[in-house]
Image (cartoon, rainbow, N blue to C red; front, side, top):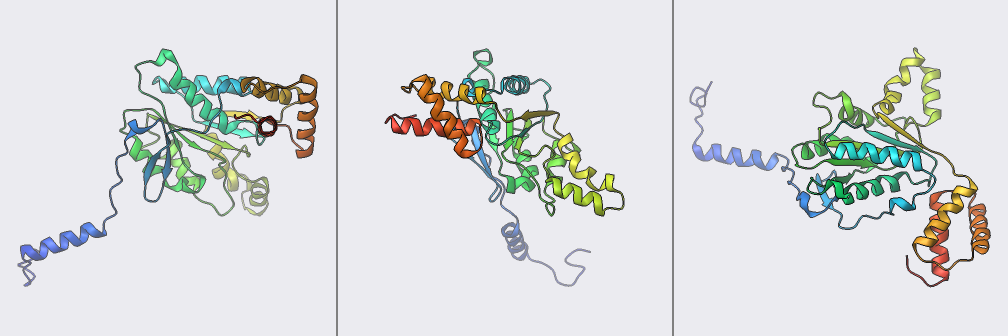
Length: 293
């Protein structure tokens, strides 16, 4: 049936007003970002845009001590991806303060500084916040046709019992009809190997009709990461290597024995030895010496 059949013919003026009203109701199209503006961006789900980060807060990869194996593994995986070769999504999990997020940012910088990649497209780093995981499909759509390889990075990723946003991540990593864009790889850090709290997994097993299937869907999320890199608490010698490495890099005046005793006491008062603890000690030491880092 057309407008004349209904007995209420619509004029061109009325049709135009309807069209304008529909345009106002439609969600605004996502702005195409200027990927040349920076090598790193932060994704904002609302209003769906990427903000360039002119200077990334990171440390040099040479300063990351005690994680040599995982450092080399992640670097090699990222280099293959940046060069257009097959590579895996990576989950960096384990002890707090051992350099998981620092390693991702350091590897990104090292790849772009590699002279062997001169003339190739720069590797871009896009950070997505944990609470914006449900918007991953929109972000992937924005990156899909861009002429750059992208690391989409989520720091401190985990899910609670009533959180269903993990389904968006599963679909993007492998399960969706479109799948992950060829120019995008996903890296995440977490204190949890399976991204879920242990008490939640135990509770679902105890109350489900089929305990195995009850948690399989959620636990299988971590299986979507082809690369699992574990970070474990460091020994005292590794912790001191971190302290000495930082001190040498920043030209701090230290007497080895005094620095050792102070660093051990610093870690003892915090109940933990880690890269973060070593960095906090170095900041205190530099402040006492009146030096900038």
